[in-house]
Image 1 (spheres, helix red, strand yellow):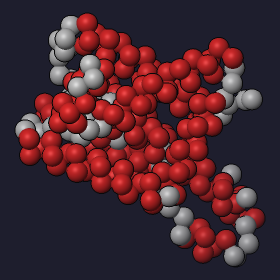
Image 2 (cartoon, one colour):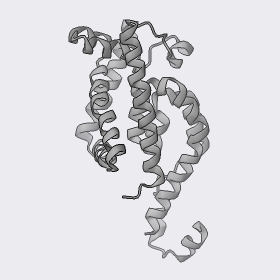
Image 3 (cartoon, rainbow over the protein chains, first blue to last red):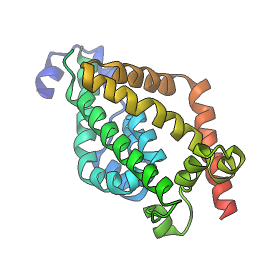
Image 4 (tube, chains in turn blue, yellow):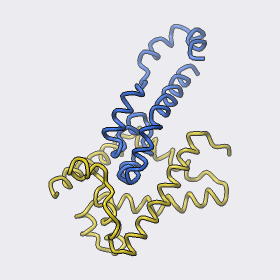
Length: 89
Length: 137
């Protein structure tokens, strides 16, 4: 789907594509393991509200922080996809 | 109104968070702060995290000891405000099938993300409070 959209897109989208703020899921996973309790991983991918929730509850009493170790990579890919789709609209 | 997958996740996260917070604070108020400290960050590093002491701060606010609450953790006021607003809103949305919570959530998230006048004082408050907590410990 990404390939099709890229082929369809005109050259003016090239600059926008280069400046797109995409996140690497592995980097976010490392941040989540190291600073997940403070909600830094959520802030980084743009989920500010959930980040504040995580920060104020000490990573959801530690449980949410551990759950996020397994969920954050999928969420990062979703966020990247949303940003790409926004560019093609 | 049909909710997206992301919005449903926000509802579920804040629903579980609200329920756990209310049970946690009630348990602590009933046992006068008898619940154990669960902060993973503190156990690993030996230093307090930005939200350490939040339970005691909230308990102090509920007992109208404002000076004590500021001394323990000033973020307790933000948490009390959220505890007074979020659970009732979630209940209203659940019972009447409305989307008030997600509207307010999206509005406030956008405000924090795009408005530096709001986000910078909040960041400074969290960092300043954390430095204070580390110095106190």
